[in-house]
Length: 185
Image 1 (cartoon, rainbow, N blue to C red):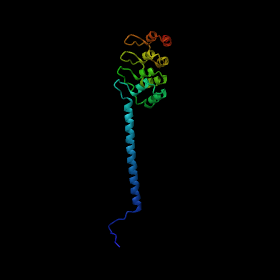
Image 2: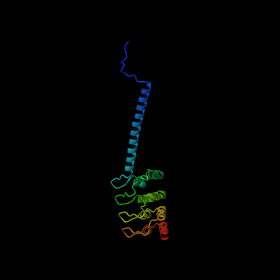
Image 3: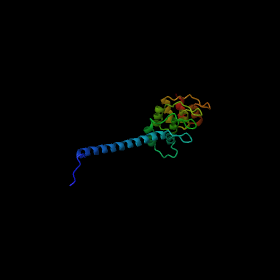
Image 4: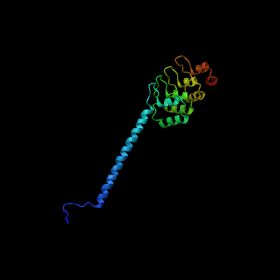
């Protein structure tokens, strides 16, 4: 039989278990660190993408509000805005200087209009044609949007670059309900 060297130390099972526990905790720590890093980067990228503009200056939210192919339900659009409301840059304008609120009136949903007005406060901002969201609501014949904007404090006396107020547009286009509403203010 071979004799054990007096200088070698036998590792106890307790020390072995401590080392194994340390290694397990270290692996868990590394895994969690990588997971948090990936999650954080995905979150940052989604924030950046919500405000990314295409060649026309349209953001994802603006495109959703246009809903040109009727691919989105109103609930999908509301969810998109609700889930991203703190990350949306409400100051972004398209190539014609239209605001997000102007796109909201095109859509016509009063909840969306109120939500965007609350967070973006763009009621009386004008585009390249001098038109406000109220001008566009009248132009698109969106009666409920007109009422919502007036209730939120939109000014009905602002003239566009053609010296037209919203009531002038309603009269010219023959939108009697909107004309009556605006003339009774």
